[in-house]
Length: 99
Image 1 (tube, rainbow, N blue to C red):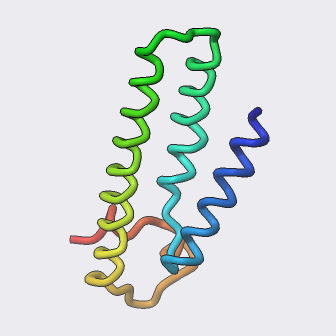
Image 2 (image 1 turned 180 degrees about the vertical axis):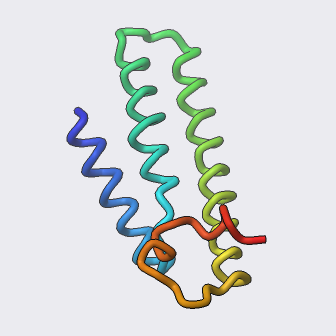
């Protein structure tokens, strides 16, 4: 199960990095930590409707979180160009240091 989550997270993060032209591992963190933890909680033979409601709520909230973080990083990269960039500058999120 861990390998499936890891491969899926890496492939999805790679697809976003190619499409957006930057690496920002928010999707990787959501897949690996919250997705895996939620999967183990739900697959604990709990078939009550509250777990279904929690799953759908986390799906909707996760999409909003992804949209906010990736939009913030995209705008930071548009409005805060780097002078003399190093390799670390391409990996480090620019939205954390942009003023």
